[in-house]
Image 1: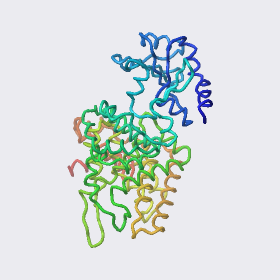
Image 2: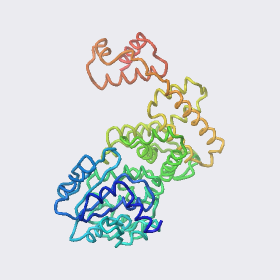
Image 3: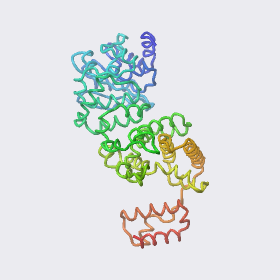
Image 4: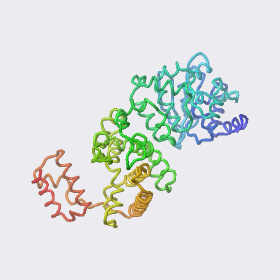
Length: 465
């Protein structure tokens, strides 16, 4: 698309039209990701504008009235505001010029592809950093190294853009990141976390991780030990690259999946796809601690249990939420489980239903992770027959779950916490939670089906404890 057509496309956008009609003689520029997405033909719901006026807050409040939008102050010090439109999908971010002029402003930005602007008053592109050329060549290039030093988060943002766009980093930028990654120590962990979530949501996460260099070891120190585990009879890749390949396979499975599977993984409040790919990256972090060699066979007994515990302090340090950490720990602990289900000697509806009950809302995720793991491990001892049999079994399990969940009723509560405390003279405690969890597990396994059986089960467990 040429510049004339791009200009026309921008000016025909309904939100842009309303901004122009409202602004009068005020100088306004569309900037950043908004312009980049217009050029790349990507859907964009976030309009970024820079305004040259004395009172940006007043301007923003009046524009909010024009759009009947919700006004959200993002940064009162730097005069940055957000308008959330009525559809709750589109938004407008408004900022005041930084520096003496708009040219000064865009020269302070992170990468050339994000510095392309469109002057809404004069209806023309502004590209003083040759961003259009870099965009056409799919290159992420720094405007200046000083700009990176001014905000070291931009080192991680570069990788995030690579993961989302599939572009290459300029040689200069890549070298700078590899040598100066420790600058991230000066960045708030909240900002780092936000970039990591976006990085793992990107289509090109695996390619980015493979090419990221020292910054990944800095953020995920467990990878230093993971990198020591070589390929073996079951894995054609060293463990670090097997972990990255598992991320790649999750992405491929997601793209090929039916609509209801993709919708499940697109849960935005939880960023489920991003967390599943992070789980894939971390799924074998327990292997270095459990690694033994017997003859020509490498064994990693209970690496799933070890990894599920090992990830918790790591993810806490990176500011992931309690819900996200619980999810990733659960995925790591159960990344082998679906394959065990489909390869058990007695594969039947009862076995499948037990899996459905145990996995709950995470069944799809567990199955995809197990399939990705299988497709990423093709050592010389693993035949095509083994792989195909496993993948076919997992596909059947997924089909069973998708059908079963439509009519699945929750298990009856045979004894709740209050009843257990009253009957066995207990108080609220970790022990009570453990008993409730174990009772549910026994129900799922078909060991307990009545109230009397539940009472006997709890009584027996208390004697054992």
